Image (cartoon, rainbow, N blue to C red; front, top):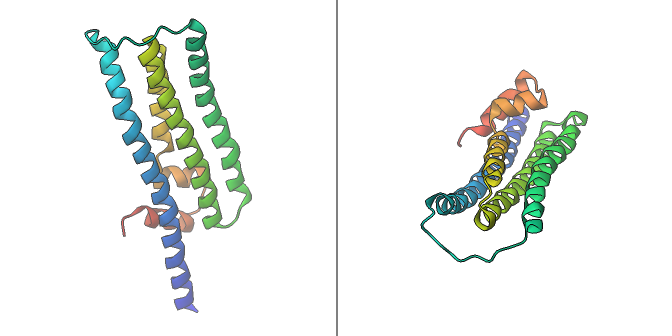
Length: 172
């Protein structure tokens, strides 16, 4: 019986590790795409020497991009919280991690779109509000990055489940 328990635990840690790594890798890929892109636009914005002769767009487009940026930041926050509440209805740790990973991936995708909107807005309108939105988006990206302590605290896990999460977060 003890061997069966250990093999189930090993399988569970392996499954948890896959979910944990999926979120972590996706977050790093999305940051790897958006940070350099925004960085180039920001350098263009600050240099003042480059002239890409971009078309002049109406202020309605600028207002729409600002509203979209704000909407995306609020949407990711509330959608994540709504989806995450299902964690407390589940008793199974694996199911809790599935809910967590799906909610986090959705959050990461929305944040990526938000970064792209911020980059386009800064490029087209040179409005510093897009820099502020990008900075706030980076804060949410840092909150979306999985860490064992954050997962344990937000899911309100016990010691045994917390140890499994810590094992899952370690490299194999």
